[in-house]
Length: 155
Image 1 (cartoon, one colour):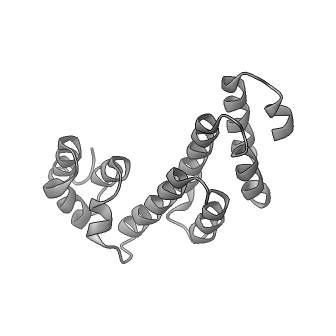
Image 2: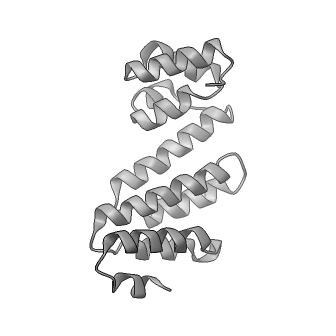
């Protein structure tokens, strides 16, 4: 099945599942094209949701390795017209910098989404969790960061 075939189905739930399946099995060389094609679906909320799941899955597997930078740049180009998706990629890059102890700016973490703050608060990076325990956007983020600090990041 390809994107053209999927687009013929009027049920967005069926299309969503089919897109996830295609994205789960796409070859690296075809990934940018497939992401771009999925984002042509008329139901933009559904299409972006499918791509978001794909980005999160791929970033989880790639962020700690050398292939991440090139992948993130390619995905940013593929999602450039979709601000939420490009923001998620920027946040994955910030998460990567924090976790790998690369240079990062605390104000970027504090300006990030609840998703990234919570993900980071549950991690083991002491400087970031200290910042979030003190100034995280929500009580849940502050509590999660405090718990991580008190329990060695095993939340």
